Image 1: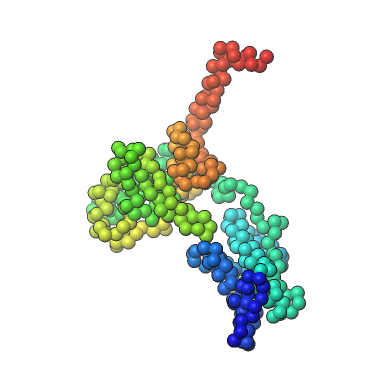
Image 2: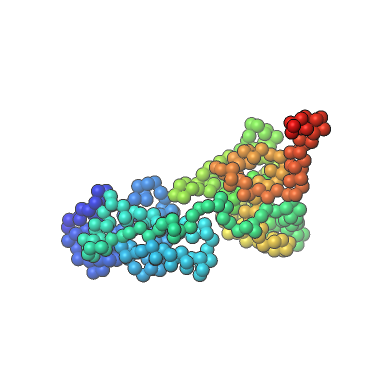
Length: 378
């Protein structure tokens, strides 16, 4: 058998083999296109857990259009986007991500260096070739820094205190009635304190290991818990998780995790397990389990449903801001590249705004009192 050589980068000829009669040549062409796109992404250093969902989405688009890529038009993109909005009610950020994936596949097919247009015309006749289907006028533009639920907010300090107190109370109740879940309740109470105390995401928290805590020479009073190495931070698309070091700033949170590690965790019988949060069956606590326990506590307290585990991270940013901590330091702590990302996490209280207003007005009022401001206006 001889391979069919097409195009400059020869992607098509590498996937299409001559001398073989295909029973369904259209389906064979689609599979060759997907293999070529997979190879291209792999060559760019993208990971399997990025490539596989992209390919799955393209197959969903194929099923929706009920047509082949060389027959796709911008109208197909319009219809699909409308279904994502009107029928599935997906968030704009999710729809834009889906559109971006289809655009990338389409651009791969129409790139002359890969030879797919020539291959399609040779196989299916003149005019049968892929065209661009995603344009500025039929896809969602990224215009806002934050596109999440506008009702999302952090805990107030009073709500946070109620939540953490309730988590602690579950430990006392389990001990009093000699319930089996006392250890798990203690673990979860500490886990929520760590999410808030270090401004973590849910997945970052679930993947913490014992060795991730270490000393910070700048804060020797925290001992072995002065610095937290977050190894599974939120990754950029197609990239591995980003790491960051988070300095401990809340002494009560340090005391809580130290007590859990030194006095409680060993009772789970998982001394050889690396995870910080272990289950009674010897496994690692999963993000979904964190979410389930959080919802149970929140609903028991009748707190607003808009509060989610991520609200604890929002609260960390907001409360440190209200306490006068440097904004740049907070940005580094939570792993934001841009200050605008940190800004949308910040929902300061009226008291903070009033205090900031007084600090802003004091220099002007002081100048007014000594007459300098009055002179400046003349």
